Image 1 (tube, one colour):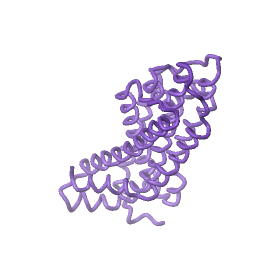
Image 2 (cartoon, helix red, strand yellow):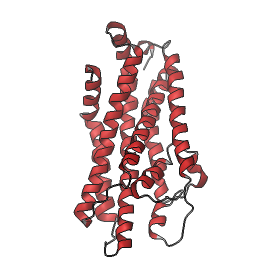
Image 3 (cartoon, one colour):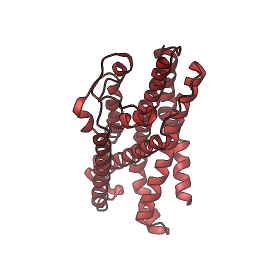
Image 4 (cartoon, one colour):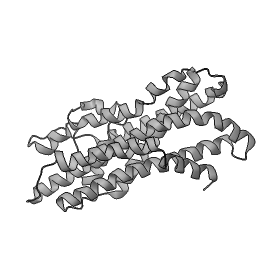
Length: 275
């Protein structure tokens, strides 16, 4: 692990704003979800299954919100790192490709640590309340989903930062940096709203379905998760193959646009951009 990679991870994990929004704010909703909104008792095998599904939904949706919150800070850090990158790649042995790879790996590790914090807190607090250890049915699948989510959100944040640099609209950074969180809240709205086939079109909206499937082994609906959990009426199940294709497609789109903007940004020195 190089010095830059270590510093990148340390900077993200000790940033008060990232800790506040990525963990503190989301932990508040973890407590509300488990101790206020969830009133199911585990007297029968069916109710125990319902509680495990509820817990899986909690770490799926709240974990995605946590990662989306961290991606806001990523947009800022990637924007300001563009100035330092010119000097690091020019006066050190770190080339452009190595700098990009290490920045990506450092950010991804930090994002996953934030997500796993929410994941473990949901499981731990649910055990405190109900005495049920709701471990995922497919831990490797859940981990793979979290890694994909982290990769997608990193490149979305990078795309936003580069778009601001290339367009020289630095005043728009604050507004545009909230796009990852907006994406996260649109996905979060599926708890109440059935998006239908739009779940495959809207960026990363099918991620909670993949997390839920790997968490409990059941095919989740295309939306309205609370109705699915509490109602006797069957809801249309999501096509997991299309859901996975949607996530991979949007990730490739974010990476491709980021690389295109990165190439264009070489001719736009940050020092010449007027605030």
